Length: 303
Length: 303
Image (cartoon, rainbow over all chains, first blue to last red; front, side, top):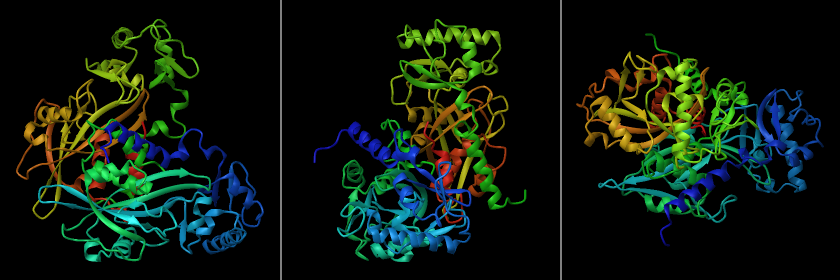
């Protein structure tokens, strides 16, 4: 592959960041979305096509008012809210009218205004985008530094059978933050399950950043924040396939990884995690990258 | 001093970030500001009290229209624009009606929509906040790592005679980016001038981040982006007072520096630069800091 001009690379990265933050761009569907509120606090965004379907369940969702869809106040506990919404979602799933519910995972995500707040209910992961509920995860940059200081990065090729982004490049390990589980604990678990990295190595991963963005597609709204860890691996260490989420691991020179970011072969949020690494490790420099500050702003949006 | 509770510390930092981004908070003066436009491109924000004064100079500033104050199109070059605006500003300075112009520095800042664009004019530094023109600078975190891995940070105490933030704590070195001068070049110059750090050491500083924010006060609007460098210094090295901008340097354990961030003794944007360091160096961790993601978003706002 011929080397890409620097300006073309920058432009591709700017486009990636715009795409991943398209919910807050002019002309997005945001103005037609309803705020999703529980107990007066906003916990998500509901697109109009979802709000229409929810009207059939007035005992769970109050009719839209003042730009908001509210959970009925009679549902006044974590458990009653979660159960009532789950019944509605199971119904919608059976009707097969909403494509994303075909990806039902039986994986419970916490719903709350902010990560530091107590969860107000849980919701099936596959449904969270219909309600624009914030989702949190962990991603780990696995890398090596040679004696001469050259940085290489471990990338994973996602399995062809993954529900989302099959066959694309990804970080060494990553996973969603489930209700009530710690961030570093999740990281150590994912390193073990996906890449067979023993806990005594994974525990050396260092928290260094978050990557936060909000995008929309035809199904819903995705406000997400990924906690980013750096894990420097011994030069001889090789990750190996664990639970089958990954088909192959590659160790690549960092300049090659940088080049790959601008192609279509990368899971988009994982590309953002690598971009953040390139900035923190001075692989990208402000004197030569005109969009340096834009990159930083695009990686760290307010949710 | 008794140790501050973690939750109080977090709350103080959240308040700092809100203050430094108050222009984009609900209830700010933004809705009453005029866009400052040159050739159809926005280059700043003009508060109403400044727009009123500019009406007396219709040969330079077109009367406000559609929420914008435009530079007259007859001023069609870098030099004519800069000179015409400078004449107006020198007038205002003589009238002594605008306090910030008492801080006139004869320091020319470039005016352009984005740092990567060609400058459309220059403007005296002391006047930039009246026009909400974006300002860029460099800040360097000077730190040491002991054999046992303990991190300490060099802080500067600003001279009591500085025009801005006299006597407050600051990063090891910092300075504004003047028209046409490179970012790393500026950093090396400031390290030399302010802290007598020789170029062969300063050049080892690594670009790692930006800190970007927009605040307003009674005088104007301050959209700023600081390019952040980390400079690990040899354990025995001591910076020393150069051009008199600094009265003293201190080497402090990183936990002590963290505590100081929450007090009133720190120049606010320098405190943000240290906060960014604490995150990147895993001194703050997401499992124990509930506002971790908010900190990252607050440090990296879109200008």
